Image 1: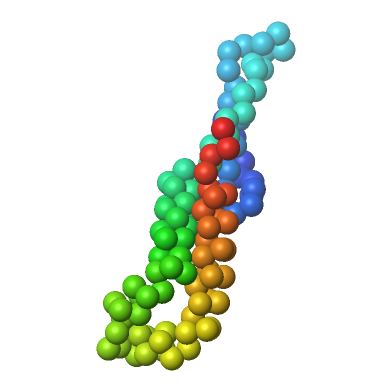
Image 2: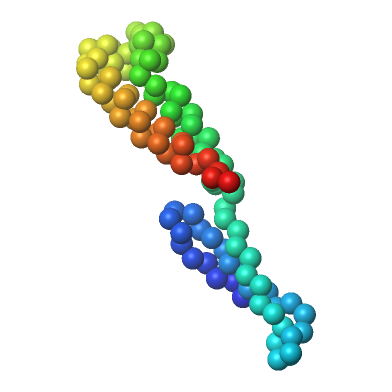
Length: 105
């Protein structure tokens, strides 16, 4: 049995070559099993989905209320235009990445 590792995007895919049975040539048949890193993919999907929910532009007033009395709250309130643009860009990026994490089966 030999193990090969190849890069596909950012996920590592492990390829295993197994010899099964005995063929006519005495070497057996070669079977290739490919498995991705499912735990990392699931964690990555949850992180992107959570970031999508947290950076929704409609949640800016909630963040301002939660962070009121802190330097971060003052920064958000004082620069509301930049805050809206930043939240919108983060929301669109995280929503795009979150949608790409769903299985396409």
